[in-house]
Every structure is written in C-alpha cells, then in structure tokens.
Length: 139
Image 1 (cartoon, helix red, strand yellow):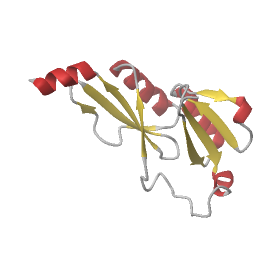
Image 2 (cartoon, helix red, strand yellow; image 1 turned 90 degrees about the horizontal axis):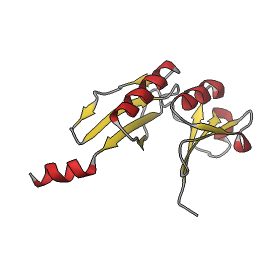
Image 3 (cartoon, one colour; image 1 turned 135 degrees about the vertical axis):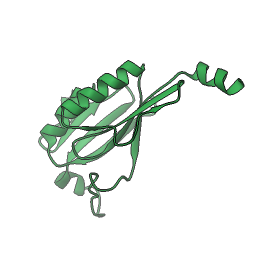
C-alpha cells in the first residue's frame, strides 16, 4: 500500500468547502462523506477530509483554531504546469477562495501561488522544473 496523507480540515460550511475543493480539482468520495464530512480526493495519495467544526471537535480536546485569523500550516500541492496553477487559483477564487495572500513566487525553475480555501486554510500550488533548477545551480 502506498503511503497516503489525509488532511483533516475543520470547515464552517461543508457545502461551500466542498464546492471549493471540487473547483480546484478534487473528486468527492461518497463512501466517506455524509452530513458531517466530505472526503475530497486530490490524487491517489492525497485526500482532504472536510469536517464540520462540531464533528472535527469530537476528534480532539484542544480548541479549534480559526484559520482565517492564524496560519498553523500550509499545504503544498504539486501541479503539472504554471498554467495549471493559474487555472486552479482562478477556479478556487471563483468558488469562494482567496488567491495570492502573498506575492506570486516565480524563480524561473519554480512557480508558486498561494490560495486560501473559504475557511482560510492555506494551499501552496507549486510547479518545479528540476532539470532547470539543477542547470541553474551548476551555472
């Protein structure tokens, strides 16, 4: 079995969060979704588990953070191209997300844009040309 990651995120509005993650390219897995959770599959190894805040609270005795006010983590997701990053960022913004919380990073061999979901969770969309990075480093 490949190593996988399930990113559990507390959300205020499950339907709005589900629309956002669908817009950026996730597929909903109905087998693990109900009125408290939406399982949003990004890839064969990455799944976002969107949980209502009340349901998420049943998994921890710690208080839940407000991701719109403080950043506890950034989730970096690799993309196939710069164009994919731009299209995904725009689709996410149209679905209630906030694009470019910081300036776009363009280092030639690496391109990165930030996108916040409707609850403020930070996604880092990244494309890298490793060969160009190696060539630039050798120069």
